[in-house]
Image (cartoon, rainbow, N blue to C red; front, side):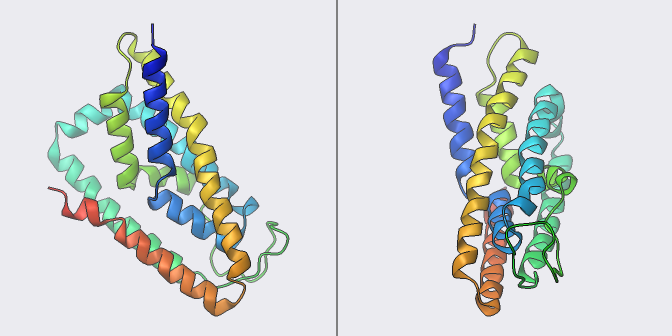
Length: 207
């Protein structure tokens, strides 16, 4: 029997780790600012559902296997750094556009928001997602039926993660109202890109 206290502790960890700044949230804030909430929905769903899938796979044994084989974790580390630098460049070079009624037919976009598949796949090279998944399964996986425990962890994160990332996207939409001039929006994109690069610091310095 899984105790209420165990579920509550898991929920608190899921909320704190989901709502705090990280590559996903910074990218969604930038997406909300540049493309609006509706056009960022596939990105949000890709983050939430992609991470749920990651939890299930990690909990099923992949996490333990990778931790037992350091070269694999090192390869993931370098791949994550390279891809996050690419995403930072993409964010910094997003052309300022006008979001009209938050619809999917904005004009003149030189860049497009991440698709569902791209956002889901990004979880596998997202250092914060790896930390969250490994910690959740190592610390908060309930004892007893492992399949039921993995399902519970994935469910709690699925319920909490989507509203959390939606808050960051909505915050980006609100920022757009202040950044109505192309130069201001371009400066925001560069700042968001720099923050994305800064989020690499814990991983680069980790040994």
